[in-house]
Amino acid sequence: MTAGNRARPGRALGVDLGARRVGVAVSDSARLVATPRRTLVRTGDAGRDRRALVDLAVDEEAVVVVVGHPLSLDGSRGPAARRAEEEAAALAPLLAEHDIALELHDERLTTVTAHRQLAAGGRRGRDHRSVVDQTAASVLLGSWLDAHRGTA
Image (cartoon, rainbow, N blue to C red; front, side, top):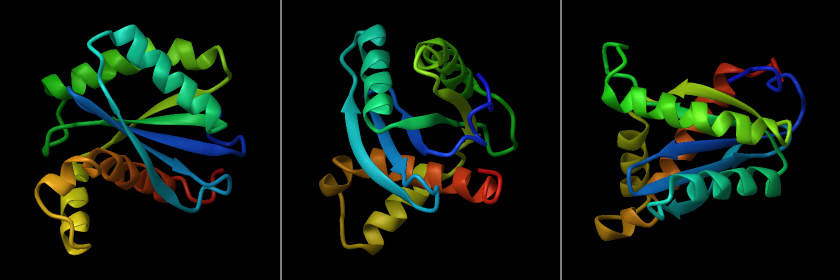
């Protein structure tokens, strides 16, 4: 996992890893705005799911993929954070084949923020399910963009 492409101009892809679904968001090429893009449903085949993410990153012309790192509120690494680290470690070499970097970024409270944003926009309950993961990915990516403003 490298930050090498952070300074290279281009789009960033935000990824919110879930057990059943993977939310995806993308930035514009100037890295000013994060936009929810889609939700990938897990197939049960980890390799196939990773290839789908790589294909999406290539299609979106991303130079960096930002994977949510679900640290505990106190900043410690619990089971969810370790799973994300393992998945990111498996995804990184596949992305590197396309000269796409991978970074982990603290995603504490992104799903809570996504639910609040959707509720404020009038989406409730079941309506959330279809977009909450991609909205969480957008919140994550927006946080990463804010943290790296001026470094891209």
